[in-house]
Length: 344
Image (cartoon, rainbow, N blue to C red; front, side, top):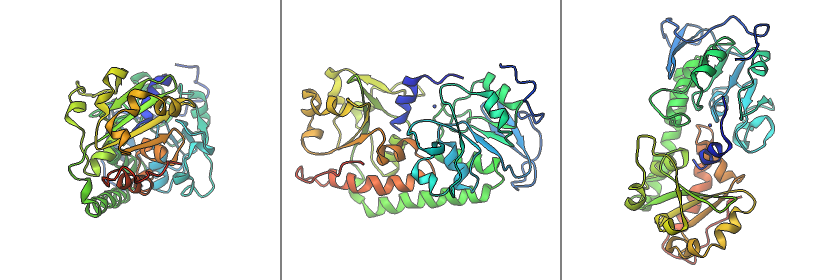
């Protein structure tokens, strides 16, 4: 599978070789075992390409979704292989995952295409990709290596909410109850934050990105827009109106349409060395009321804030709350003189 660089960049503001000698005989897909919810028993996990039976307690896990490693680690299993997305961290683990991995560093898999030979050499018990975008051909080839759990079919590729990814990972690893418990814990943190910050309710917020070439994109779907909604914020009607179709794909904005970025709160992801300069010297962008009144939060690509929101995972979201809420509070206090801390 090929994941175009442009597609990967947009997703951040939140994804047959000759293997006969390497393939294991454990096939996935179409399994009919009963789902008894236990780690030792067989369970069947539905996904885009049908269903996969997993039995026992997988020890060697390869993750191919863009953020799946966080969910496995949250359940106490450090993958033997992890697909790199962005960040360049050891083992493709960001700090919130590193601290739970106990010093174990997974082998890094390329993101541009699936290296089936490398995966086969890792001899996985299961391959996980709920947060990914496998094709049918990818799934068929991977299923010859190990039982493979693809992305859920009811969402766009790379678009499954974190709760669904957690549910599927918990089933695959034989820990559905622990997965449900972790979901409740994180949802409880959002509920507590909403209660502590009633001023967020009724306010509007947007996520935009600025790329190296100065182009602007606006988002309605993905981890970061979902994060805003989970805090009680909403999208302005003018911005909402430009998103059509079931996938509500990111929209490129010409400079003549930058007024669509007006909101009570604007998050701006900055991708590339020149992106921040492009934004801060653009007279149209700097003339927006949301910018003039200090209600903008800038997020460099490798900042912790951008990383946590881009991943939007069961492990990164608690850190995202720590990073985002003080900045949102400063931006929404009604005083343009209040500085919004830079995202480091």
